[in-house]
Image (cartoon, rainbow, N blue to C red; front, side, top):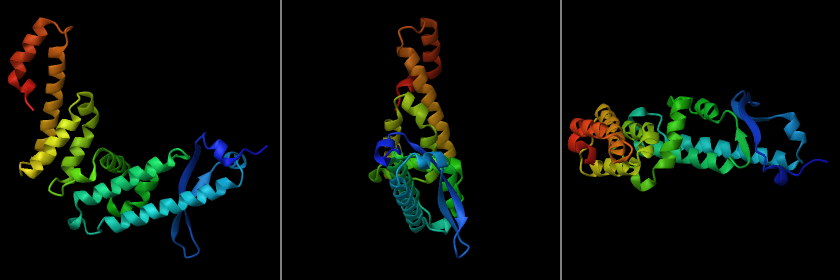
Length: 223
């Protein structure tokens, strides 16, 4: 008996986005699904795939409208809008399909904008970690990305939100650092936070605490 699409969708169906030339010789995205998976469903899966393709094409069209081809006119807000689109799209389809090559596909279709697979990851996180009200064009994309690159360590140290607010406050007060300077600053903050955790850990030997205090001084408690 052939399973119905709604019942089987609890099991994510792996799909791959590839490209084929249309009648005009223009490459268009196509959805590839394993034949065994296809016959396991009723014909409604075909409708779901058509819907997915339309959503993907709409995503790409919206992104093209947002990001200027002229690099000098691109702003942080443009990249955030694209990141938000990618994040929402990925979130909306993840319960239905497992896109095997999602980052590769996005990178392929965004090649006009020099976005590699690593950049796609960062754009998605940009759209996920920041709300619209936290986006300021005075803050360069580079500064936002420095915070995103260090997000795992900052969250582990429980200071990601604090540093995000500080970055925004510095933008409003016109006290932003250069990208390289900000990178060094975040590295020091992560290190200081780790030292602070060791200081407050009752299991940390007194000698170690004394060494931390002598080395870091009051920097341990600075914001």
